[in-house]
Length: 120
Image (tube, rainbow, N blue to C red; front, side, top):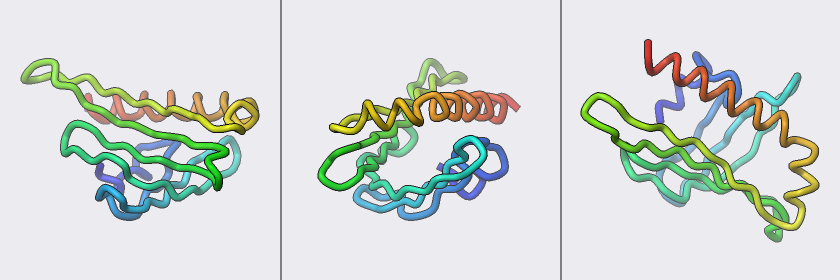
């Protein structure tokens, strides 16, 4: 949730600004290959220290992406971090055929960087 520090460690999500409150709008900048892309999702869930989700979409529901960060307590010194994205809409297959591999690789790089940061 410390969005200000994302540029210091995150190779995929380069910047997030905006309101973290449910219903708030974010501005998210992703590093996609050689360029960047920007989108403005809406926060749909913010349960302190457990779940944070946003929903991005294009008009008419043709493409939606619901991003989720969840933390599950394992014991007093360990947690399980679950990071996921669910894509839907009429254009989901077409769009994901174009950006799917790059997006997946970005998420993997982000997860590795977060693991390194958390364990440091």
